[in-house]
Image 1 (tube, one colour):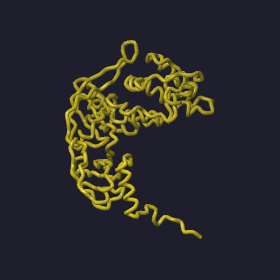
Image 2 (image 1 turned 90 degrees about the vertical axis):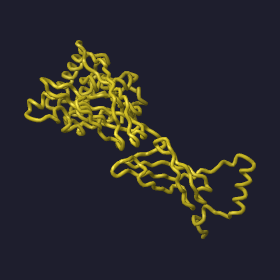
Image 3 (image 1 turned 180 degrees about the horizontal axis):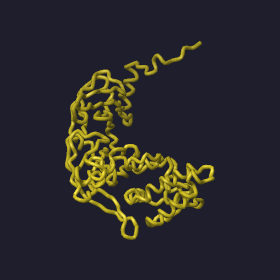
Image 4 (image 1 turned 180 degrees about the vertical axis):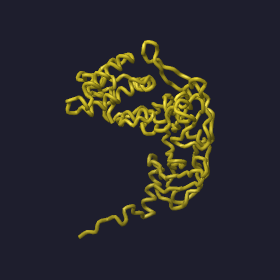
Length: 346
């Protein structure tokens, strides 16, 4: 996935106001719209221009995009020529770009989860990695929860959405957290101005990756006495190399000594909540064996399971005594780890 420089695509400066962005878009639309353009790749160029405009014309998305930082510019881009970052190399040559971990957490956008109000546009992988898939928002945009006629639905406040990152421990026990949400709006001169608000949010026990927490009335204000929209918080877990989560199941690696694997025994296992469990390792266990602890995953109905994947860790032969013990094993056990794998001689 390549980084896309939306400013270069539209041919505007990063500080351009809303009017300049709109004028640039209209100029390029006249040049590349497939109905009128004679350019051989007009449809692809128009798609790039539409995507850039979808971000830079939206104060919330533009503020989030700008937070990624300014890519290093190089000669060769001529805004509006389909650059989409060609000629920039601020992100490792723009190839293999991935947003920084947790980048999207705390950005508040208008519309339901997914980042768009279901416009059905075909956006790039880069766009979707930042703002989510447009189709995910279909049916969750402004006025969805309203009742009555079209006029009443239109007057209801728009729903908002944001991503929040929590620790796996919060999913096990539940928690109350102060969440800072960042957004943006246009000032009187058409320039993007950041805004922030802090909410106290209850994280329910048993919440899963990707689950939505709905805060009724915390979206945009309604008009003419109509209710405010809702705020949907999409839950994601902070990266933690110790645990892999799938649904409510949690998997972790359990490091054991060779004698624990060979002879069996009880070992202590750290849990996401900060405590420990005592687990029996069966005698004769091999590396990669998976132990299942039923119901020890994320709570729920039913609760998930915890899986322990055994990793046998051998002590180093870095002392005379250690080398002596390894030599004794080699002499007394007569063990051939390659037995059955030898190729017969012809």
